[in-house]
Length: 289
Image (cartoon, rainbow, N blue to C red; front, side, top):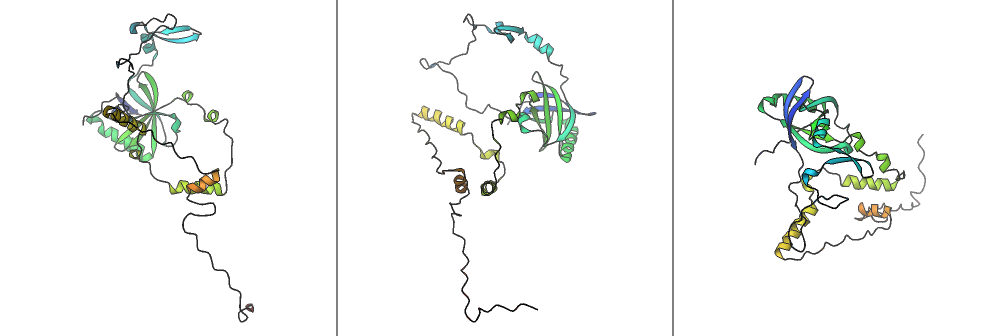
């Protein structure tokens, strides 16, 4: 198999240590099934065409330019050369500005994952030094550089024999959690309900295995295409059965394998009732001393 093609090449710089590196996309959508728009009547593919919003006439590619709307239907146009000139100059260097704990960055700031590796054999020792230093300190490096015509913040962590580089969203791009949860009431859960929830979580606890999860949409789409080619009919999946539990507590008990009064398995052995004392054993024991 041919090695992956680098998305970006440059340098990773920590203080006076500089290492030539290459950036590789860690996630790809190229394996997904691609669907095209087709004219139902002719079976020919449909192409997108941009038209003038006022005149309705097609606009050729060379006449298209980006613009910022300052008022209703009034734009400041920006030529490609002007946009490139405004982007900060890139020296192709991932300049590390700080080291933080691996757990310091909230996942909501994660954007896209990449792999970072040495770009040539001469960089392998310096690369290993940086990787093992991060691993030993259980730390991540925060760096910035221009990636794909935009200044990006990158979180760099040790991963196997390489480094994981995750681009981060800026603070202004991430919506505040308090705004999303503004209408969610604070409800205190305690007692048996909370214990049942903890029990269900503990019984289903495991390790994350990406291979265990399948893209059911892609699989269903592939089967649909295959069935259409073979002239077979596809049966629509049956809807899930309605929830039998009448309330939250009943649902929790059912999830935990409990009935209304106890476990669904064999009932626990009950202690035999105490026998009534006979005349010979009825007299109380003397107290010591």
